[in-house]
Length: 92
Image 1 (tube, rainbow, N blue to C red):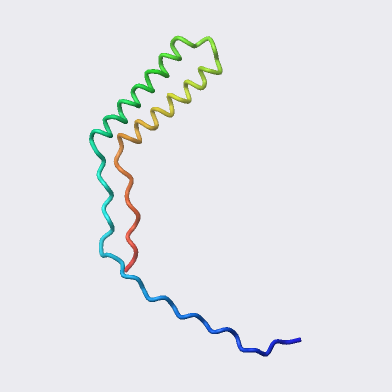
Image 2 (image 1 turned 135 degrees about the vertical axis):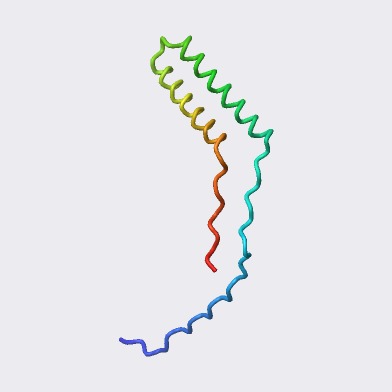
């Protein structure tokens, strides 16, 4: 059996949307929030170091402490670094 009916009509293309000339600038970080994140990172780092100094008899917990210290250092560097760039501008 063959179907001899005509194919369905092609839908019209949507109209192009207006794109702003410049992308929206990312919001600036608040200095107080950055200082709070740095202070929190230092507290986490010191807590991890104290745990390793006084709780070194438990090897599995020492490994967890090292992981937490590494995470705190990573977050500290990430918070102190520059902000991530925004999305790329669409081509014109």
